[in-house]
Length: 266
Image 1 (cartoon, helix red, strand yellow):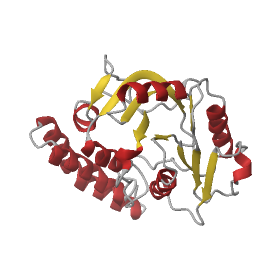
Image 2 (tube, helix red, strand yellow; image 1 turned 60 degrees about the vertical axis):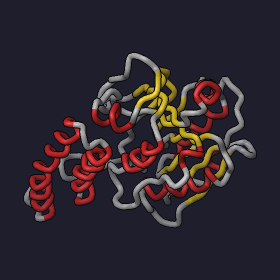
Image 3 (cartoon, rainbow, N blue to C red; image 1 turned 180 degrees about the horizontal axis):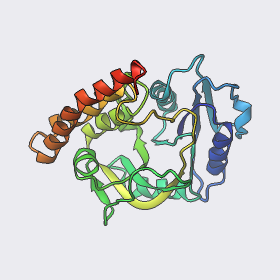
């Protein structure tokens, strides 16, 4: 279990309790990297049983992408089979370990498992789209171009597929897709309609994102680079080219809006 965190002690404790209270026994470890929370979060705050927690604190705030990469390096040093990515404002359902066990027994050859989330609170992201049938899907074709999957999902990935795959270290916000795009180069994922994660969106913390059409320069560029990479991977997809063209048209408008903001005119 991999969790990068910032200023969310209570929700970290909730997540770790959910792991310790699972219905199915599993050999697991929870790797938490605290991104210089203020006040500091300590290993003792989590209340973990011996052998169930690997905790590290960044000496200064590095942002969610670098912090997740640090956590990944720690996780893979533990010689694990699977890595589950859970943010610090989320928790898992009581049968999460049962789901992981089922996926590993039945679809170990796929090595990347995606399941549904249940959202709480008033600010829910995206849509509830989901394919009618469980099976193997492609991140580029089915998740990005055809948009078969809405909102957030749970990712559990075999360690063998994570070799050399990391999050981009350029920028801080809305860049998680860089990790998934690299992961998708080695094949698809198995999608299950089961709900395994309960997600909420806090008004602070590590995963808080600056939103809007032009929050910062890196995000403006990312709006273009993401469809560009998708188009390079799927050059014969008309839908991919259409998405890229749309973002290229919007790009100068985003830069103009960003400049006006920097000048204090908006």
